[in-house]
Length: 115
Image 1 (cartoon, rainbow, N blue to C red):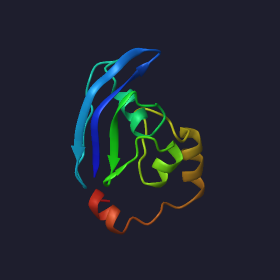
Image 2: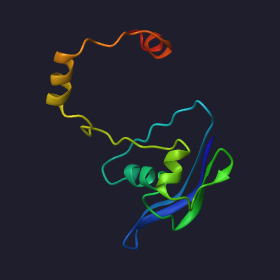
Image 3: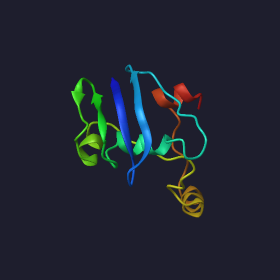
């Protein structure tokens, strides 16, 4: 479970988030929606430990992780993949797919995805 309590942080003394609180139970999902500059990426960077909090707390499975470094949060299973980032170049993916047979599509993940 993830619990965020009264987060406050910003950049260079300029507040971006003030009083953000929410709780996510195991298996729940949360969508962050807002205009550019609303603080969506700032919140995610705070959750993974890339930005220090000015106030508030972050709890992961009942433990306060507010001061944990990013590597420790990652080891605990907290991560972030930004929207529209090319992790693998297209040409690399195409080149690999021409030289290797497609992997078998079986197992729980394939079944859940309808593959």
